[in-house]
Amino acid sequence: MLEQTAPVSAPLDQRSFRDILGRFATGVVLVTANAAHGPVGMAVNSFTSVSLEPPLVALCAGRSSTTWPGVRAAGRFAVSILGEGHAELCRLFSERGAERFSGREWAYTPAGHPVPAGALGWLDCEISVIHPAGDHELVVASATEGAMSGAAAPLVFHAGRFRGLAA
Image 1: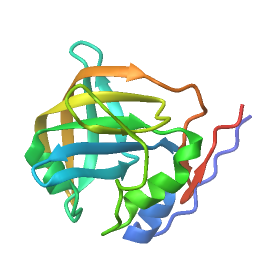
Image 2 (image 1 turned 60 degrees about the vertical axis):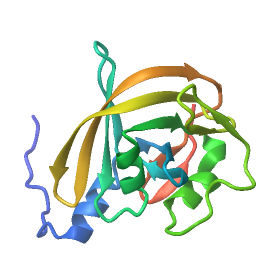
Image 3 (image 1 turned 30 degrees about the vertical axis):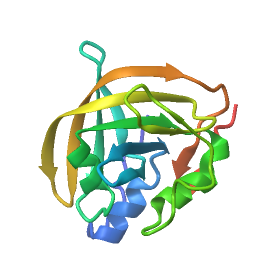
C-alpha cells in the first residue's frame, strides 16, 4: 500500500522558484541575428518546438536583456543547438557587455545569421508573435530553414551548471 505524505513546502519567493526550476534539465541554444548595427546574440535555455505543421518554435527573452531588442527589431534570427563543447561560448553569451563574436569561427545561415562552429544544428526563424509574459516576452517564430551539422552530445543546463549528457 502506498503511503501518502505531504510535501514540505515553503513560500514561493523568487529565489525558491528559481531553485525549483533549476532541477529541470534543459538544452541550451544561441539565438543570433544580423541586426542593424551588426551581429547580436544571446544564450537561451527556455526554447522548445511548438508545431511540426507549420514548423514553429518558441523561446522566452528577458525584458531586461540588452540583446533582445536588437533581435526583436531584426524580426528574424537563427537558433543554434549547442554541443557539450560550447559551455565556454554559452557563458560568454550570457554575460552583459561581452565581446561575443570576434576571435571565433562562425558559419552563416542562408538568411545571414551567425552560427558557431560545431553547432549540432541550426534553424533560421521569423518572428510570428510576441506575448508579454511577466519579466519576459514569449516569442513564437516560424522556422524557415535549418540543418543538422554536428554529432556531439548536447549541452545541458541543470542546477545552475552546464553538463554533458551521460549515455
